[in-house]
Length: 76
Length: 264
Length: 114
Image (cartoon, rainbow over the protein chains, first blue to last red):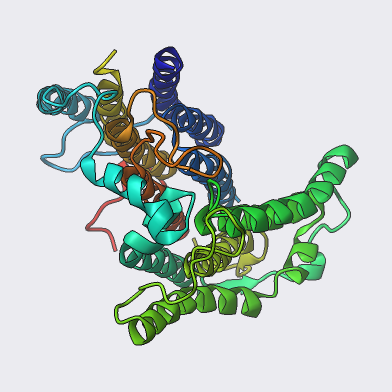
């Protein structure tokens, strides 16, 4: 279990860095979605299925969608 | 894009600002790490309060999912406030994204209805997924007191079902499936019924949000008193709020246009 | 290993702040802010975790099985939902800024400009 948690933690640390370093907003919307998914995996490893579920739904689906829509609006 | 804008007097350059932050970040990191180093191994201890609730929740509230019991009963008052943060955020967003004086509404029938940019397979998959998604949303909301899930997760899943309709067909179809008055009423009714259930507890059982319904057997669908009702209220409110958020952004993108010849 | 979750939480917070400070696009700033917020999720759940414990769901296991802390999980859950709503609100503000000032570069936003 500890190994899974360590791997998930490193994945999340990498994901946070990748999200910040993606300077192009459309690309960043995709990266932040993957970051939300990585956080979801970490929360499962921490025995928190409720939080994992809400983070996958909001962080990996709803938020990236709103980001993409906002970017599309500011570009037209 | 990379041309730096003209600096005002006394303003730091981008590079200087970055360096200044790095100095501060080292200090902040040292502070946080030294503070956290006093904590025990994260695998060894958990806060006592949680252990007490784990021990009594199934007995006291007939709820097998303790996180839901904390959210809608032990910490129900917090959830009420939190629900109204969501309510206020959606309300302010609608105010911010209203049609401004220099904007006009584009004609909906002018939208490219039948010029699809996605493949038929993608559209078919999206439409086929709408039903199962709605079902999953209802399941997650109604089983919140038994298994992981509850109103918050179920509500957002329900909102993504509408997004699937948009991806699988077009905006005009999505608008017809989503009468705005109904969405707004559902959102307000969800938030309001949370308060009403709380007040009913005050009248019947003596304190706000106190359970006043029979608790039933733990593990059965109809059990846990007011918890499933509160979960449903939150589910409706969250679904309404997120449908509203997504719709407002889509409206901005597809319907609201600058007036022809208008400035800026 | 025993300190790893705390270190990761600090790392996420600082990396997110670095993104906010060096951002050249307001949408990027908003996403970095949500990254900063996600550090609190990691910290809270790490505090609540305990070795050899299950998730606090007692539907088909004995009620005295050791389980992780449900209170921090409930806190994090509401944190995630409110975070999503706040991000949406900030994005709406960014859309309005672009409409009025035709730019999303924070450096070009002059507070003295009308």
